[in-house]
Each structure stands twice: as structure tokens, then as C-alpha cells.
Image 1: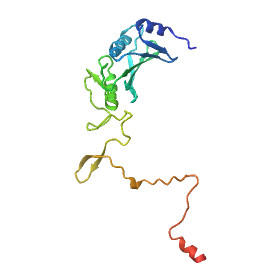
Image 2 (image 1 turned 180 degrees about the horizontal axis):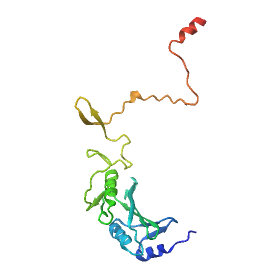
Image 3 (image 1 turned 90 degrees about the vertical axis):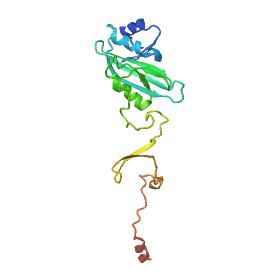
Image 4 (image 1 turned 90 degrees about the horizontal axis):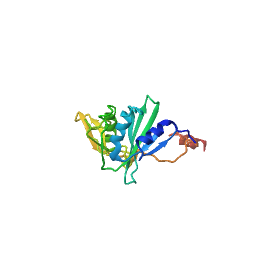
Length: 200
């Protein structure tokens, strides 16, 4: 069994209704979506905790669940040399309170989640796409997003501009011969059939 340091006791005192798991190198707290902002504010401002660095903010997509996304926040307390992970399950239409007023780094992390997963953050100062183009359709890290995307982009020499077109897969360029590269292939040279005729 893992020896639990005193930080877990402090967390349990501050958050008696939360499920707190100690995993040797970090803590995990599972909370409801409505408690995200207040909980994060407490772990940052509490002098006995001081989780004052947001190191990452991301999500995981579970398309079969009613609460489709699991929103994940990762924090570091340099004072305690401790890490904490806060997780919350949300529905596709849920709007989450932005923590960019607490952590400046959340600005880009939240924009990334919005762009790639479609998670909307309320009161964000500049919520727009950050990884994809402005005309991009859909959210690429959702598991139902097609691998080829919806549109392809190319520069048109005739129009002298970038054009967007529906994705077209040219099947004639694909050669599925199912041969093993280790077994080799028959090396018949074009024109070699003449030498066989001379031998006969």
C-alpha cells in the first residue's frame, strides 16, 4: 500500500464531498462541472496548498457516454512539490466557466479544447480557433471526426489563391497487392521474354 502524505488529509478537509485518489506521484479529484471554477480557485489560493501553476488542460472523448467528454486539469504546487489532477465529466452541449481569470495559461489551453473538441468556455476573453484554420469544419479530436476531414486545401495556380474543396480519394492510385515484402516478388524485366524464345 502507498503511504499517503499529509497533503491528502488537507485536501479531504477542504473538500469532504469529493472523491480524492492518491496515486503516488499525484492526486486525482473527481468533481461536478458546476464546481470546477470554485474548486480550482480554492486549490490555488489556499496557503496550505498553493497549486499556482496550470500545466495542462485537455479532454478525452467517450462518444458512447451521455457525458461525452472528460475534462482534465493538471496543476503543480512548487511550494509543496505536488501535482493534482482535477477531472469532470461533461455533456456535449455543456458550457464550462473559464479559469483564464485565475491562470493566464488557461487562455490558450481553453482555446485548444474549444478548437479540437468543441468544448465551450464561458467568460473566456478570446474564444476562437487556435490550431485549425478559421474556415475549418468540425473538431478533429472528436472520435467521430472522419480521418480524411471534410475539406482539402490547396493553392490554385490559375486562381492565384488558396481554395477549399470536398475531400476526394482517388482509388486508382492505390494498389492493394497484399504481398509480403519479405517474400519478394518476381523480377521479370520488360523485353526479357525474347531471350527465352532464343533459348528454345
